[in-house]
Image (cartoon, rainbow, N blue to C red; front, top):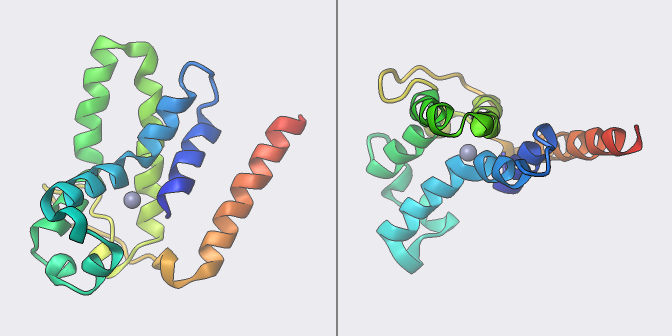
Length: 154
Ligand SMILES: [Zn+2]
């Protein structure tokens, strides 16, 4: 899904005032880390067009490997373990990172399919690319608005 909705989902599921910004940050983090790598590697040339119409999305490329790595359960589980040791009260803010991966499992396919156990396994599921089906975004944002309305009204 889009990076903004991942952040908003994070803030929706972890609402505690001391944690909410961290939750939004961790929700967006898989895409932010991939984007940071793209910016460092490709500078001002880094763009949606570069990703779609260049070597970046060809299987086996380093960009895709970085993308898979940050969308895998393994690295975040190591980070969550470290947070659990040094700041146990904040371990819960890693949940939105897992939610990001779970949502991307169903909303990506082909080279962009989420490799949940990368780099140990290339196992993946063929979901539907959210950017090619506007109804996925409509349902996603509709659910965000509905859930937040219910929480604020109740
Ligand atoms: Zn993502």
